[in-house]
Image (cartoon, rainbow, N blue to C red; front, side, top):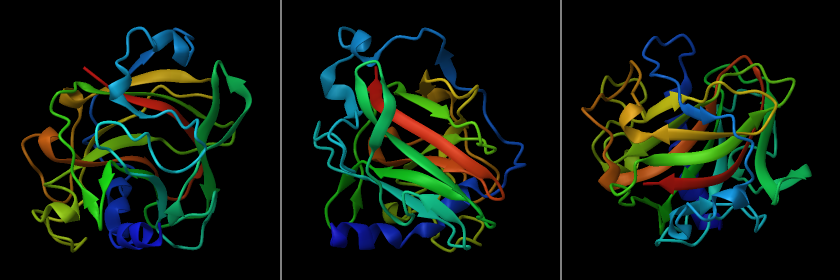
Length: 248
């Protein structure tokens, strides 16, 4: 675990991907559903091999499905803010107060006081001595449950890093000030979002990059490294993520 964590902490500039809260290049909203279905209602229509993580093992490692062996971790801009759980380390789920249908655990991130770019909940899909890519070209997108707390003032953006935008891919420039810099992932705002649990679907074809760093023609799904849920600087944030799947 220590070797995995130390390798992950090297590219903390990943959060520059969330750095400009007024960036105009935000894509169309994500798809949502107002059907308050429980996760178990999806069992008959979701292939279990598409599971990324249901959080129910209560540890930071994702479900060992399809050769994926990554883990959740929390990156911050290290400007003196605070988070619960602690930032810049692997991040396990916590019990959902009162549960959510059959789900008992979700990842909840709270914090404030960051002034540079904020914080990001990150999942590297595959890991050996460092992050490795997976082939997600058979999938249309991801779906997950999410909500925010009553004190939350930050927007939430979900985005994906591929071989072009992740430093480990060897294409982009790891210098965060470079015109072809890394971590300009493909993503979307998670909207609308409120204090109730909702199921969100993010279709890869509807995602976009923002106006900094390396720009590419499309998300390279055959070399997908990570998903990130980012909150911005100078806000109070409180968000929860649960039961994340690919979908076809």
